[in-house]
Length: 468
Image 1: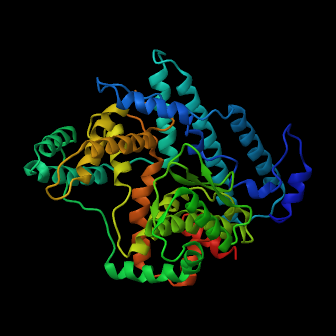
Image 2: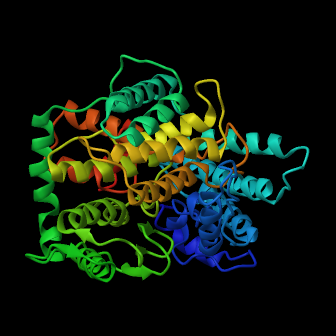
Image 3: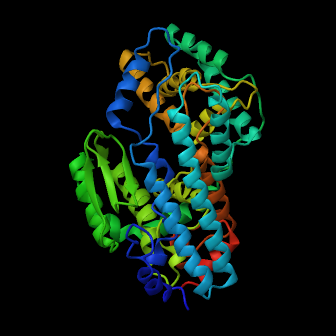
């Protein structure tokens, strides 16, 4: 039995008390689970907690980070559905060794993600005084590290060292308030120095890929972007996304406004590009970058993967694709700008600070007190002075940044983090290194867009090569 022929068998063998997905075997890569979706929480609760923490005069409170109210039963169903599909495939499907290896690695990861979310629910439900709460929180973190990795101390030290240098340069700023804030920031940062600097490609490499992505995505951008339009409000962003989705042939996909939100994100379960109704308008250039990142990478890789003969390249992808998925989204934005930058460093530092790579584990509040100062000082240019608007905006952004690395964890516990967002920094550097080793042609670049795979791995590249 071939992989494709397994579909009929799976759909005809409905022994579980819930309906099988119509796609059957092709749902293995998806398994109806994206970990971070369960960590979004109730938006009203999150907003109230943000206001409470930011207005706390004592400056020592931590938020209560709730989890989304999906029933835990959905996680159990997901695991049972996956086990059933894999059982049928194991007994009947004639898979190549490469396909079999990828399939079992993927199934193991999906099962681990299930247990990870269940553990997060367990810790969240525990009262603060529970004698084993810390132990369970540490187990949750260990599971997360196994899934998403952990930061490297050498990289952490180099990023912190650069931050200390930038803050030190502001100690002679003309505004006393800036000087005081810079000193506070230096005092809060770990006292480390490092000669290492992040990797960046040669400008000739960046220029090559700037021209390449205009070849690959030029038609999509032309279809979605209106000539002479300078700014896009949320509703106009939705229109642009829908034009881009139509252009790439993303059947069943659409863009929608999401009330009460201020971000743009792709949801593979719903097949939607959600645009926060409260998002600030985007410039024409920013809109192009969003189209490249969200549609050109996140959606198109899935669409092209599902057009191959290998179902494993469909859905939300092969195990380990997170290492390149977000990084590639950021890199194509830089290609459009013809300027390579270090990206994701704030997530890397906040994770390292939470874990205490300097020997001092921190809770949410301690990391937040460092992060908001970083965001304020980041906005200080030349001899400009601080104002309350800059500080309040920095508070809100810093709060969101720290929430990202503490999702699914008890915010008052030091030394743990949700490490998924290491992929932004790690992916950005690793992808540029890969792209610089051999300048890709248009056809070669399209291969890395075929399915959500980690193209830094030879076995994943081989799967793509054999799936055409």
